[in-house]
Amino acid sequence: MNTPFNTLNEMVRLTSPFPESDTVKDWRASGRKVIGWYNPYIPEEIIHAAGMLPFEVTGNNEPVQMQGAEAYIYSNSCSKIRTCWQLQLDGQYDFLDGLISSHMCDQDMRLSEVWAYYKKLPYMDNIYAPRKRDEVGVQLYLKDLEDFRSRLSQYLICRIPDQHIANSIRIYNRGRELMWQLYELRKRDRPPVTGAEAIEVSKAAARLPRERFNEMMEQLLDEIQRTGREIKKPRRLMIVGNDLHNTNQVAALESLDAVVVVDEMNIGIRYAWGQVDTKLPPMEALARYYVMGRPVDMHTWNSDGRLQFIGEMVEQFRVDGIVSEIVRFCTYNGWDKFDLKKQMAERGIPILELDLEYGHPAGAQVKIRAEAFMEMLESRAL
Ligand code: SF4
Image (cartoon, rainbow, N blue to C red):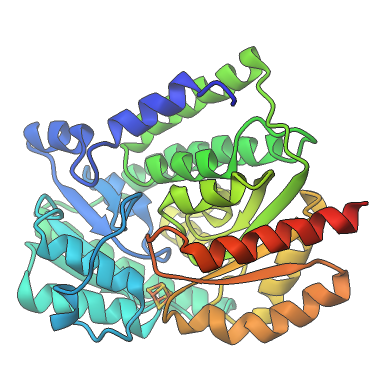
């Protein structure tokens, strides 16, 4: 058993209880607003530049029973949006002053529509999410970002200036740089953190004021260096697919003598990836970064680019096996499943395919399949 990091414990403490943490309460007590965001096409930098706290709307480490939500959202919608709506029905997101989404997929649009209809917040907005990673996509997105800045400025009765956005970009770039340093350390033969811990770090980034998060990331990297902590597990895994906000699901995999060294999740590697170009005008720089500056995701063309990226990460992080997890009724990852399997077979990388209820612990059947997968990896290594 490895000694837990003090800094990571502190990150978890500051983001607890979930979702209205002590940090959120303090923030609101000082008269400042909290804006929920729901998918990776929402530039937190603009919300930050407006002096508000961007907070990612998700589930967490506890499973949520979704029967109430199903009175509003079909039960064959993905379990992530049903979970988030259930949390809202339970009053847990009452602290939000606003919610911003984008048309990344039909199901998250449904969530924002239901939210607007039944629980309208003082500020609600949607941003266009391009499907193509090209110049036309950048320009369309940039136009919509400018409109979004105008609407948010109107709400605040104060124009959000370029200078503030440039400053927020520098702060968020620093956060990405620090998170990426942690990814680099996970390339080691014995990484310093587990996959479950790494996801807790990313969740803290999406829930804390970014300046505070950056300070804590510096402390965490320092603590890693001072303690020389090493995770000694024989198998190296990569998780691909939907965001897993319940880190117990990852910890369950890691209890099987394996460590997750890398992922392909929005809350994971994409959240730490790259830098916004500080030499460009800030709004254009944001548009270029959010459309072109991150690894291809499951919503953008072409999906071959996503599979290629997964293959490259497998090599860089020396992965023994991939766990492909799909949140129940999320069609996007399901559509890519066939090609993923084919391309990884060509690279000789075994895949375990899991279909999980968002936020729910893996059941007995999943555990049996995961154990069999680990045994197969072990026999390949002999
Ligand atoms: S889990 Fe899939 S279907 Fe649900 S909001 Fe995310 S991308 Fe959309």
